[in-house]
Length: 179
Image 1: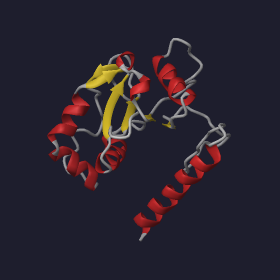
Image 2: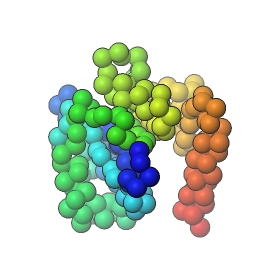
Image 3: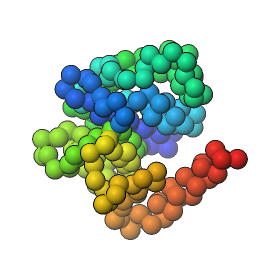
């Protein structure tokens, strides 16, 4: 990416072939906060699903949104349009993005060679771009899951410093929310 171009984040939401999402893995309450964090830092955000189009979210029609980011989302026509018209995974060119956030995927994400999401993530990682995968219910990353934590993997020479930056940002963010 050139210096004057905005940072571009890809947010991939797990859906099945009908566009349905897992009730606990992908909700508007999990999408809106990172969406606005990226937007508020001047980034472009592209939402994608396996099949494209509108993902049916279990909490979309929540009558009284409690979180600030949810209230903001419901008042933001551009954000609602982004969600209503997600790209299909096969429409994505991984090289166009600086990073990816995947929400709700379960099972062996990289085990299926026909999986377009795996291809996107592999391309991003091979070109040194960060990827965060926040799994659904059926991913076992440790014997007891990640609990309330966040697990970061990396094996490049820059992984230690990149992980240190991410951890510092996470700790600061958590402390700001507690204060």
